[in-house]
Length: 195
Ligand code: ADP
Image (cartoon, rainbow, N blue to C red):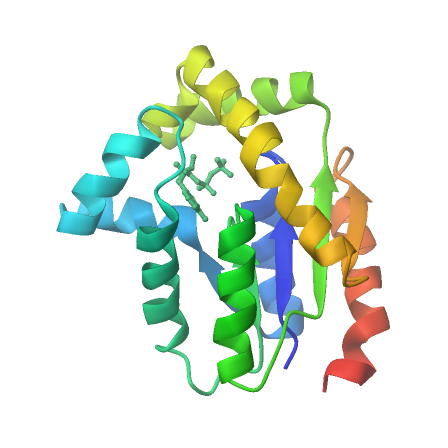
């Protein structure tokens, strides 16, 4: 299996690039942010809980997020591979993902981390907020909090994969197609080994 983590701060372009990677490499896309938003829209219990954190720019607690991810993984027993977008966001989530994948006799092949300067992130998120209707993208103080949470709690998850020699930083500024090519080049290096 080809299992990838697409990593990077809010606004780095994970959603945009995930969609392209999914098409090219025939992967199942698991975005914890998308799953939370689906639950918020349908007013489920999980959605109500998640909303109370997301509206402040905080992380949803690990236990809730990990259980949700586990349920999602189990929906795709025949997947050729997964792209994890927005997960793992903490070290305990990374550890839990390793365990879950080991139970399925597979593992993460590569973490691709999109590197984008903070000013550019804020600019992109405020732009997205104008059209997406995402309340967490319209308030600059919530955006700043998300970036702070990323720096304090999430960035360390990269070390978890770096120690396993699975971490690759990719420049996330420029044309969407150029960034995609940088990502796809890294994935292609892995393909023969993962099949
Ligand atoms: P972005 O990367 O632009 O912040 P996401 O759609 O990935 O957007 O996530 C939106 C929000 O959902 C996050 O700010 C956080 O509150 C919550 N969330 C998403 N994924 C996780 C996760 N793995 N752990 C905890 N909270 C999460």
